[in-house]
Amino acid sequence: MPELPEVEALAGYLRQRAVGRRVDRLEIAAISALKTYEPAPTEVAGRAVVDASRHGKFLDVLFEGGLHLVVHLARAGWLHYREAFPSTTPLRPGKGPIAVRVRLDDGSGFDLTEAGTQKKLAAYLVTDLAAVPGVAKLGPDALAADLPTFTERLRSRRGQVKGVLTDQSVLSGVGNAYSDEILHAAKLSPFAITDRLTDAQLATLHAATRQVLGDAVERSLGQRAAELKGEKRSGLKVHARTGLPCPVCGDTVREVSFADSSLQYCPTCQTGGKPLADRRLSRLVR
Ligand SMILES: [Zn+2]
Image (tube, rainbow, N blue to C red):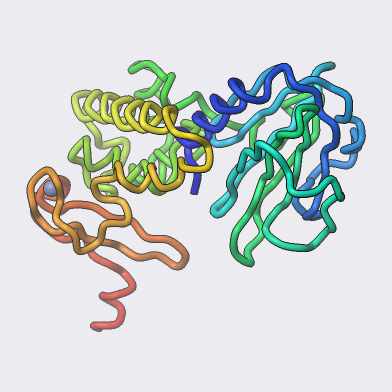
């Protein structure tokens, strides 16, 4: 699932490659992906790409005249930049993984794709960013937040730190993968309760957030957009590494499973050597 670092890198790539180019055509292949009716996709044709940026995990492509294409890539969405398209024939709706195609005046452009059968990618064409529900309620950016802001936001919500850190209205940009990495770097249990964290623990968590996200942005920025996904995996220490040794202490990375997700952590680094209860497993044992 693309999070802050990957989306930042995609925006950076679009700034380099697409800004200044004019749109030939915006094609919607997955009708359900486009969440807005007005302005119509045909309104984008002829406009130059002015900027590309990020709001939390949302990608924002700005066209001349103040029109934004805002995209949430969800779990399996991605952006593929094409130097050329195989054909000028418009995409046929409902075929394949391509949800949206943007053709530019130099023959290049990009596809927004979504793998798998669960279609959650969401695209919005708006003149006002506040019209995108997910963007309107975003908290401060997780990478940009200073220590006082970070502390205030984390303490504003009582709950398990993993859940609070990934709540986009508390801080924006962090998802399941980078929260595992940040908590590992901060040596905190994912189940630690936010309002019991000391000032020192919050300062460590803030530093870990900036370090982990900053490193991941740097790794991603040097990559071509098409290669970013692979790069994300190679930099991770605990996320998606269940059963493998922790690169910091050598203990075995463990996992807690939920209905439709899981978290990974290192017991020695994060929970005083004690494995966390896996509710699903303990129910089976009982
Ligand atoms: Zn460890």
